[in-house]
Image 1 (cartoon, chains in turn blue, brown):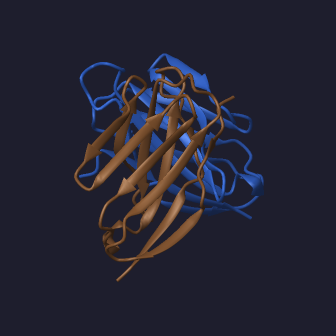
Image 2: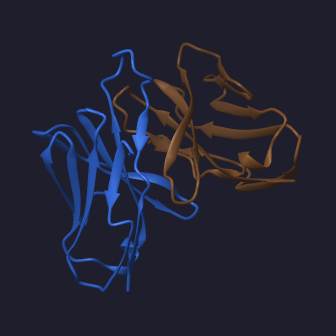
Length: 116
Length: 112
């Protein structure tokens, strides 16, 4: 089984609808992240969480909210979806720096969201 | 704000040729520089991570170099194979808190 899973994998919705993207991990990491990827722009950080009680805005948080339900679960919500939120969304996890791990992030397979 | 650029956006090479992928960043005060591989439908996979105190890292056919003073990193893939076809992204970690700044990636096609 994959260490980082995302649901749904694909979603088409309409402008104004509320959408939730879910992420679960079995790596036991405290740190979790949400990114979006747009063609030609690379990945941009939306929100990140260093533990269940520590949630922070990233570079492009407007129009998004998150919930950290448990160490293993981090959800991203679009309260009222708009077409320019059409993108590929990735969840990622990491350990603390210097713990002897590979000091990198582990990514889920992504959710392709289309807002009509 | 850290800006990360990867040029070219795409390249196509015949099997067996060595690949050279470039990454440039604007702020040399980075904690580390990472290279990822992205395959369609499979997310990103970390390939190599170079700490700021290091000049290069190697893993099998892959070698990545880092020159902080010039704001550049290069990923070399020796003797390319069709299985190397993917998008390669570099990412700079500015402050050891994993708020990575990503480049847009270079999409590589290795022709059999």
